[in-house]
Image 1 (tube, rainbow, N blue to C red):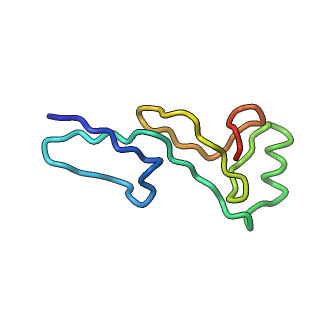
Image 2 (image 1 turned 180 degrees about the vertical axis):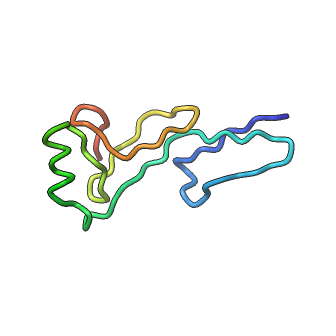
Length: 84
């Protein structure tokens, strides 16, 4: 059986791939952002109290690594991920 790596960062529309006699391994990163309309005091409370900053459409971080297998990203801290 052959193994192929599917770059999830480049293929946002596809959530699964099935191929005969092939193991498909999701690789890269999947970035989850929320609409700016969803920003509220509750999300700001997490940022202030825990330095946990959820990702919104107006502040998308630059993902500068390529993990295998895939990692899902939905938040960052103030020192972690570079922001565009």
